[in-house]
Structure formats: structure tokens, C-alpha cells
Amino acid sequence: ISSKLPDIGTTIFTVMSKLALDHNAINLSQGYPGFDTYLYLKDLVDEYMQQGYNQYAPMSGVPQLKRRIASKVLNIHDVEFDPEEEVTVVSGATEAIYAAVTATVRQGDEVIILEPAYDSYAPAVRLNGGIPVYVPLNIPDFSVDWQKVRDAITVKTRLIMVNTPHNPCGYVWTQEDLNQLAEITRDREIYFVSDEVYEHIVFDGRKHLPLLSHPELREKTFSCGSFGKTFHITGWKIGYCLAPRPLSIEFRKIHQFLTFSTSTPMQYALAEFLEDPSRYLFLNQFYQDKRDLFCEGLEQTPFKFTPSQGSFFQVVSYAHLSNEGDFDLAIRMTKEIGVASIPVSVFYHDKKDHKLLRFCFAKEDDVLEQALEKLQKFT
Ligand code: PMP
Ligand code: GLN
Image (tube, rainbow, N blue to C red):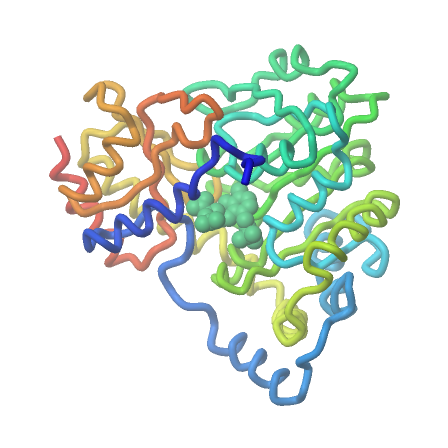
């Protein structure tokens, strides 16, 4: 078969997790919590299954869950979405991103991707005939260079991919970032896919500012979220997309032929679990404690870093220590030191190597401590 993605292999997350397993290393590579979800949430799924909620859910999601998602956004950001028309439940943020890109991008359309970027964006764009236009984030703080984004916009620009809090770098967008984006796209038919799966994981008193909190951006944004990150259920693959009515209509046309609908008992369970906002609002502090523990330990290593602002990832630099490629180093550290990480070059289309590694700190404290002990042996 002639490949539609000839340059793409198996994702780095699968590759590094397997390497960690093969070498019995601590796996801080693929981003997923190293602890279980809540017993109560699991019991709820079980209850709904026992009660017979086992057939197809409504295509756009279970009404109770859509209402809870809409009220979460209303309570936190004071922005109204019609749960019936403007909220769609999907099988993970990956599906939301793919469906939103498919709904907007036509052959030859340009899509701006800020790099380093999560690995699913460019393939989604390319499979839809779009042309990724890459704009690098500033080094070392990974903030957005707005002049560069402005310069990248052409008459063919149809979409800009946004990710805040950022994977892998942990940068969290400011109000000024939202204002800049609004200004440079004003009066143009440019849409936004905003990947906000780490919306409830921000640190040091920062506030996550979704694109939908900006009145102008809201009108052109597909806001993609995931319960995987928020309730430690990455394996359930449930996410959502909030978008104004005209965008949601097109989004749903794609969603209905990608997966049609998402697991029924899990939707009912999540709707009930979302009743209590403290179940997601405490997450900032929960992960900030882990970030602090991890960063304190990193101080005893030769790596350089600035503490992550959000997400459950910490990027470190070894540029001052060695010239070794980041991919080679990530593999060698897995085998020799026993800690697996992700080389940040994989998030660049040209594999640009800034000598950075990404660690996932969504692990039990004792696992982080063991990993740090190993990393402290790194010279
Ligand atoms: N976007 C980002 C930035 C992610 O880190 C991830 C997964 N960790 C996803 C999207 C995919 O989310 P899901 O598992 O809900 O498909
Ligand atoms: N998003 C996770 C990460 O960044 C991985 C998800 C996946 O394995 N596809 O590590």
C-alpha cells in the first residue's frame, strides 16, 4: 500500500513505554497517571452497567453529561454554552482534535502549528489535505512569538492549533496571548482548535485561560478537553468539544462517522461524578505538590530547568552538559540509569534537537523519589 503518512512511524509514547518495560525502567515517558482513579467513579460505572445502560449513547453525548460540562465552563469561566447544541462528548481529545481539523481544513488550506507540538496535530492536518505551517515557540520559556505567528498568516490560513497548558513544555497562555491571537486573526476566516486537556492542572496561582473565555475567539474555537487527565482515566478515552452552534454542527457531522458515540455507562458515571466541582478543582494543588517534589529533586541533578507552569510534564535541558542527541540520550538513560523520558525533538517536524527531555510527574511520590535518586547519578 502506498502510505499516506510515509514519514510517520509508531508514536514515541508507545516506543518509550515499551523500552521502559523491556529494561525494567521507571516510566516517566508516556503521559499517564501512575495511580488509579476513584473507587466511587468505578462503582458508578458498574452501577450503570448493572442497570442496563449498555447500548449506544446519543450521538452527541448523554444529556446529563453535556449539561455538567456546560455548567463547569459557566461556573469557572462565566461563559455560556448550550449543552444540547454546543457540547459534544467524544472518545478522547484525540478524536475531538481530528474531528475539528476535519471539519475545517480543505485541500491546500494552511494550518499554523506552534512547535514543539503534540504529535497528533500535523498528521490530522495532512490527512485532510492541509499544509502545516510551523512556527517555533520561544526558547527557553516556550512563550509564543506573536510576530512570527503574524508573519506566518497568509490568505490560505484556515486554522491555528493552540495548546494551553502546553504539552510538552508546560507553558500556560496569558490574557495577553489571547488578545494577540484575537488581534492578528480579526476579520479573517481563521478557526482555532484549542487543546486544553490540562485545563485543571495549572500551578503557582495561575489561572487557565481558555480561548472560549475571549468573546471574539470563542466564536471561532473548537475547545477540546479530556476526562482522562482530570480523573486519572486515560484508558477510558472520553473527552469533549465545546464550540458555537455552527461549528458544532459541522463537528458532529464528522464525529458521527468517526466513532458515532462514546461509552454509555461511563458517560452516565461521569455526569454523576461531576456533580461535585471539588473533584476537579483540587487537581491544581495535587499536581503542584508533585511538580514541587520533582523539581526539588531535580535541583540535585546537573539538569537545568524552569518549573512547569501547568500540565503534568517537566522539561529539562542538558545542553550545557553534552552534545548527545536527545533521542539517543533518552534511550541510553532508560537502559543505563533506569528512567524513561521523551526526547523533545519528536515534537518538532524537523526533529530539531534543543537537548531537552520531558518527564511525566503524574506518579506516586515514592516512584518520583526513586526516579530522582537514579537521575541524581546522571553526570
Ligand atoms: N492533547 C494533548 C496535549 C495530550 O497530552 C493528550 C494526551 N495525553 C491528548 C491531546 C489526547 O487526549 P485523549 O487521551 O483524551 O485522547
Ligand atoms: N498524551 C500522552 C503524552 O503526551 C500520550 C498519549 C498517547 O500515548 N497517545 O505522553
